[in-house]
Image 1: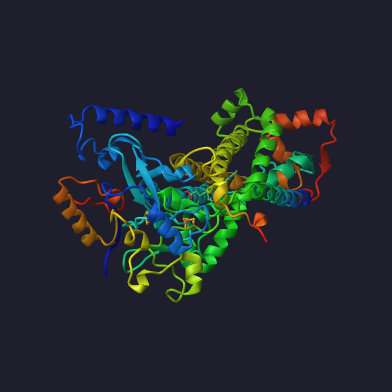
Image 2: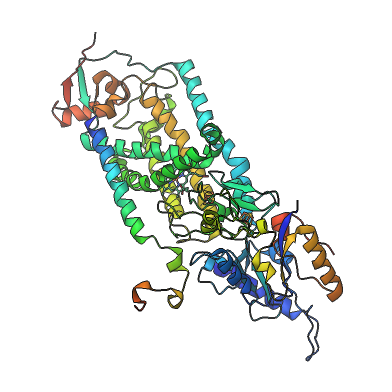
Length: 329
Length: 199
Length: 47
Ligand code: HEM
Ligand code: SF4
Ligand code: SF4
């Protein structure tokens, strides 16, 4: 569409050039008439288009000056944005850990656990998470591996590694996308924002201060993560598939935009997920159980998901409860 | 050492595509890949011009700057070459190249597009010995090592397409422009070398 | 842990399936960018 518009523009200006050409003698060749000016074309359009006899439509683009601009973005901006997303986030998390420390189960471990995530939910989570980790590492390698890793391992090893990482990046896109869709279908009904979330945020969510505002299956923080994963991951997947199918949906300008969008969205998602990984592991006592065995400590559940615990016990008539494997000392 | 450049005098190019054919033959370029092509602007209208275009061997080459595996290098003659052993076929050089020079043996990015191929200024690749069979199979001819210029420009019937040291071909172009009284735009020079030829 | 292993196996299966499907639709440049008349069809060559 964009291409057609450009072509139309090009044609109209040609007509304009043709109109104000000086009256040339009917016979005799006046080569200066309506000369095509490269400068005018370069200033007026995002690229200079013509015709070729080649069956490859991309060959008809004579000059696309946006290429060097895209180079400048990748060379001058991308490494800093990547550093901010990864190193900046790690620094923030370290700072948070030093200030707040590990968030403990304030009531200590209970004698009972409660089933939080069933087998299918854990399966779905780990499939998406594993694919995501490899996608993130291989993506970072494409973006900044040349600066970070290449000097350490040398050209040959780096090229072989990057080749494999690239293949894994391209094909792990499928389980990742499948996981995002499953997560959306299974968890969306628990993630509609509500009034409880406002109060949860006002109370600092238990991160800032030590309040434990009531929450259902997912509190406002977890809902935010859910929407970052579903919407952010969805957009990352959409832009990623545009890159895997080069020139199927768009031209070279579109590919540049898709590539920038994919990189920036992915880096944003990496920053958010680092936070998620932190709070799910070292950041909070008892949180990892939810995705490891699926059974979480009852006191942990009461502190973070009070309304969900009551409802779950009632609905399963207590069958979700189990004696803890390692009872409280 | 010379600073090799291409210059297409669009006033002289007659869209005969002989440069394209010469390139394909000299380098045994694979089917479906064209290292050089002729683009016609305003086809069939007043002011029609044809420009023969290939890799321009840019100053501060965009392709080299974006390559994730850093497989490009610039020779002493300022020719931009790459290593097909290191290339992973990601396609980034095509997005960065202002002239659409890099091309790939496969169209989808599924696994790989294959090793990128582009104009080598008829000077082969990084393969050990110049003019070796291994070099020819991967990159094509190494005419520069034999003291010859790229075949496309050498056989251009109207001498529209010129190859050689930038200063010398710019001087030839300048003389033409003074003689005939008008220029034809040194197509691509502003973008590739950040300098037009002023007459 | 068991679910983690199942997840990784499924992930590999889906990725492999994806690669097989996509490689089947991969179009080489010598087919895409040449006309049929220009393509030497070795199967039809005489002798
Ligand atoms: C879900 C489907 C996804 C698809 C189809 C996809 C596809 C791609 C493709 C085709 C590229 C171009 C380089 C190459 O060919 O390897 C790329 C680059 C990249 N991807 Fe993905 N990707 C996906 C998900 C992700 C995820 C989840 C992340 C990060 C968490 C990510 C991070 C990146 C990064 C950082 C780059 C490099 C960007 C740059 O160089 O500026 N991708 N992706
Ligand atoms: S014309 Fe394209 S391929 Fe050639 S040096 Fe410039 S950016 Fe690289
Ligand atoms: S396709 Fe090859 S040469 Fe081009 S940027 Fe990618 S790895 Fe480098």
